[in-house]
Length: 259
Image (cartoon, rainbow, N blue to C red; front, side):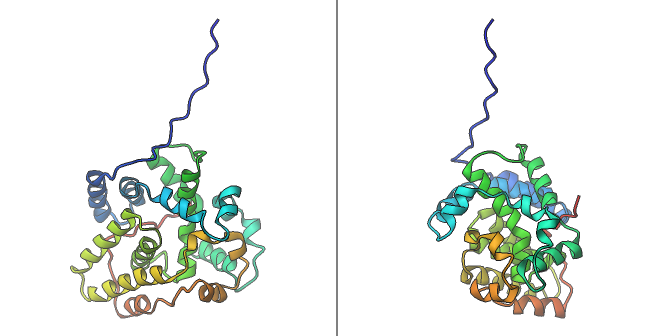
């Protein structure tokens, strides 16, 4: 009797092409329903071809990057562990992230579930580039805390999208930011949103490259100390825009309720 060969895992596509047709189709649905986060992941999959590879390679050139890549910690395992989160003292990044979860009701697992559904892949493909993609996904809400862009505010999401584009140069992030800016021309006082989004991009360029941060160490650091060290400026234009008018953004790209 012939032995049955074990099922082979499909190889990761290391040279994916951008799929603008899918991206525009998903953007149309996102414009119709700003809370349809599924469309955001479709845009990212369609347009962020090669971004994880490029940034993983960059990670290896940073001071801590080699160790982080070698250890390959799954951030979601930490971020979903309330006992681990509870250890951080008031005023730290970890405490601020804990408060973020309590205020918004969001969760790292919520984003992961949607992403896995869209991509149609196992939760953890065992490949360095796939790991880095998961890391970027899980860093998103941490960056909300660090930057001051609120996750439950459409303009805050849009500003963080612009910040993220500056940090990653992922075309999908840039596409969403651009469409949000174009939509702002239809809004009363939309110029304030455009100024805030440009500020988000500028702050992302000026800040240290956040992918290279050891999150476990970062969470123990005082929040304001971390912001200074990482050169993350106060989002003055965003705060002003939020105060002077209620911006109805075209997209709310990553607002996900906890499952």
